[in-house]
Length: 336
Image (cartoon, rainbow, N blue to C red):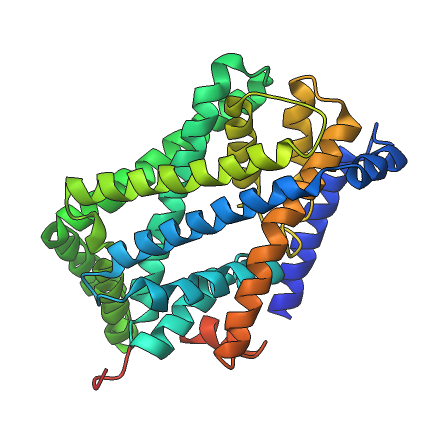
């Protein structure tokens, strides 16, 4: 029932976004532009995108190295499985799924690896907002959206500072946690919460030095610049041109929108912001829709197929996502 409720919420949010995009579109013209696209431009875009996936894998390897050094060739399939899970399950369940497989293969506690995943998402959000801020002087965005960007920036910067402080001052965090635990947590659950706390702090260790923070942030910028290059390649398949800065803005807005719950595959939450961004810069709406839909497919299909292959090779089943969620708060056996 919980999964059904999550799916229903995602479908409703996707339907809302789609309803915002449909007015003014002529689907016949959208389809005509899709048919006339020069699809060979997608091939170099896909190649650059998978280079970005390797950069993501290196970033995760770097963040996990103090827990266990794991070669990139063993982590890359897990990153692809995570993308597969995000693309076919609601509520970004792939993040838990890749941590679950990492525990099965490498005996890394799910709580520790999820802490690194949370840090990844925070830094990704910061880079998305950086892209938006770089484009704001040239972007005719309504004041409401500008205010929303400022609010999200404040929240993500605050989250980053809190995580960095926790990683650099673990003894103070420990004193605060134990003070709260001694007064508020029942003795019956204290052992479990203590273990979760230790595992989570272990996952934050990658933020314990300024050099590590800069390394993670720099890699995040590189990852998202590579994805924007894919936007640029796919754009050349259609008869319009906008600047790379506009594509950075589009990349930032659509990926911020896809953090919302939606139908599997980010239906609507990806497409509507993309169409509206291009339309704001003078691209005809039907052409903007054909490009955005093609870009969405070019981003979704290749990594989902690769992730599905690794999912099958790991002998995973659909029920494993439920097992992953159930095991996320369980400690590793002592022998591990």
